[in-house]
Image (cartoon, rainbow, N blue to C red; front, side, top):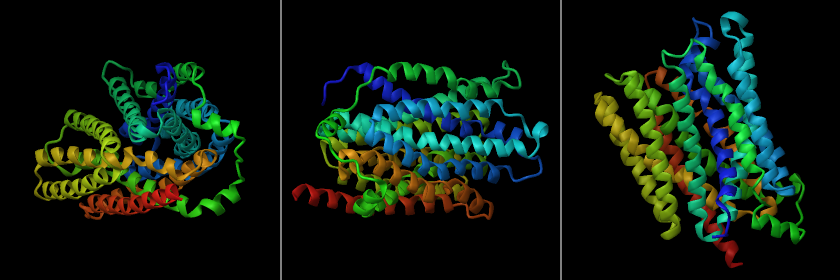
Length: 415
């Protein structure tokens, strides 16, 4: 592993935490969002997930912009700009007037905030993940990829905790807005630590060797097949993440009996923890054993736990459903944790940021952006098991394309 002071890792990891904190507040404050920004006589759930899909449409814009900055000027600069940019729309969401005060302009402004958020969010995570993986080196690329993803969960849990605390009776009625406003001090703390980070050894070497950064058209001509594989892999894994981690806890609380608000909150926290632990373990195992073994075990784990969860939902066995949903989160984890550790090997240093960010964001936009909304619509038509079928289809697709991409990487290494 490259020698690196701990404080420099802190800057990259804090950037990921802040971005996922900001981005996930919308999910965790779902009840307040639906209560304040939508008309009382509408389909709140469908409107909510429709706006949630908006930033995924904006993500490719951020990928093109910050991917270019990361490849030409460095990962550090891309991280700094995205950290500054993402807190503005997040704070504005906490200041927006409600539907009763502003009418239709309230959800319109909320949609615009999520769109801008998506642009900056797209450039932040991929730059940070590449930064960490390039610093930790070839031997620990799977662990580095998993650590970056585990840091995302810290942001999710922090946002969940802040929303829960600020919704307590001791807070005023507008207390739910406080977590959004808290984005500002978090961004300032993150920028302080990001000032201390250096560029990665890989980027510094490429810059010293004066590696040519080709225009986007030339990049797409040379790498379109590989970027296409990245789109399928990241899209499939993101669908599984969206449904099993974000959609499933809210879905189960509505279709199963005897799930109170406290139980639902503890279950959501448990899903995040199982997801994080699964990612960390899979990263360590992939470095020590082999990616193929970890992915194969993970895929079969998703299939088997989905069958168990489906039976629990049909039979209305609440305890079984809650347990199997935790297992499902653990089994999905490797497909989310290890992706960047693989796809980073498919591109040269001076093309990584753009290629990975573009493939990742297009995959998210085409496949995962609408996953929760589609599931919500299908469940409304009594297709209760559709979320599980969708999750398994996405995992099988991701597994197949990962196998093809790894074969391509091995062939390129031999040549």
